[in-house]
Amino acid sequence: MTKINQDNVSVEEFEQAQTEWKSVKGIGSMSDIEKCVTAYKTITAYQLQQNPNVKKADLRKSKVSKKHFLRVLFTPNKVQFFTNFPRELGIQNRDLGTRPQMDFELAKAKALELTSTNRDYNVSPLAAFDAYEKDLELRVSAGSLKRNSANTYISRINILRPYFSEKQRFSELTLTSMVQIIDQIIEDFEGKAYVRELVDELKRVWDVASQQFNDGENHLSGLSKKYVINKTKKPLPSKAHTDRKSIAELFVNVGMAPNVNQKNAVRYMILQGVRPINVCNVKLEYIDCLESPSKITYPDGIYEGEEADMKNGEEFVMPVTDTLKELLLEQIKWHDDNFFNFKSEWLFVQPSDPTKPFSKRSLDKLVKDYSPINCVKGKISADAVKGKSGAFNTMCRKHLKTNVKSLVYLASNKTDLSRATLISKLVMHHSVNAANGESSELKDFMDNLKQHYDFSEEEYGFEFLLKLEGFKLHHQSILDDIDALKDTGLRETGRQAKDRMRKAENDEKQQLRSEIMKIFGKPDYAKFINSVLPGATRVVKDIIHTEQGRKLIRDFLDLGNKQAA
Image (cartoon, rainbow, N blue to C red):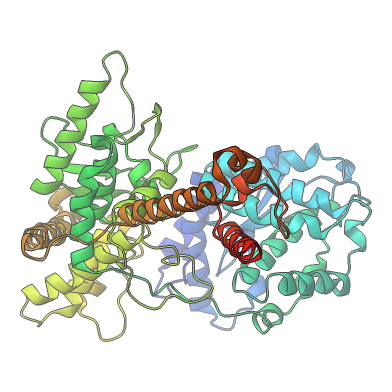
């Protein structure tokens, strides 16, 4: 809940708010809660106005939903959900969560689940992970958690499961025993920053499971926040990035991809700088007009059961420049030419199965294959993933941010950095938060209530025009850099480098086979390549495929020649 406004509240407003509060007889939906929040703010503001020293406890108010076993507590700082079970059910009441992370529908589902749960205080900690995974699935079905996020959390708990056994009892795992397990995790991962994510996930598991299996007593709640931080490395943002020339070369090189669909998927990511998942999940219906597109709209997830496409869950409207329009029309034509009796919902599809969206793994392979070698710039730390094995997907997104901010700033004759920062955030679909000293134009976007009252974008499209300006500059710079390649030429790509090394390796193997044939002759050649050399565990024809194996063969042949001599 936002901070209560203590401006003067009249007696009439106070009485009207009390009437509104009393009119909600029982909580039945989120709209009832919103109505209570509005009335509560006015009532509390009036109470503080009359007595600034009023105790916090006197400001607490609550509403119940007997039908759904819920009690909603309203305080100046938050709205909290609790179960409200009658004594005859024999179920201990508990805290379910705080708005906005918890909403009425999810709280209702959790309360219903608890009424049908046969709790067992002697279960193993492995049941805690099962309970947490079930909780994640419940949140996904309720629309409050994305499927991809749930999969990430599940992958973490699968790493944590082996540290516990069926013989242990969840309720008997004290803080001391949990610290020993956490120390083992830190040791196994050599204090890497990822340990922090694992331990945070473990805390969430225990938070959920302790309600069900340990009567609400969470032994991990006593763990100091600094305990893991002091024993692990600090997570650092990736400094790996690329430059304009490398992006231009990737744009040109991917034209050699096996089909139009693959080429356009990568070029779309280059032009728009979206996250890889937003290349894969863009649908044809997001394009306003397939004959002459002018905008692409990634929808929000405000409707029940829907999952937003963008990471922040908000709608993202992307203007279509002439360059992007050309790509979209080519991709739509490819759909029409290849799918006669079938219409895919996805703009970019899996080549092997057009009913499915293009995969992130395929995007990553294409970017690695068609980017020039040595295109990754910046420092790559030992713990980093991005850039360690060459080009990576999000370097296109990093380039969009860098390029748009630079181009807009230069277009203003280096006089308006705040405007350049604003536009770079808008094209990235990042939240716009002004730092101290930034212009009022940027701060105008920092309106927490804009989603309720501000429809200027729908009426006038201010942000749309700013995004269009940024994307136009970005796209034109890519086209200019492509023209400049006529003079500088193209560097070797990742795929060409792999082909070259593969050919060199095959030539080396063939040369070694020829040497063996020359030494032993045709009759004994087959006998030798099917033999096992000293120090080897496999036959010659198998170990010849590895560099170490070829060295072992050459050392043996040199020794054999000396002995023969």
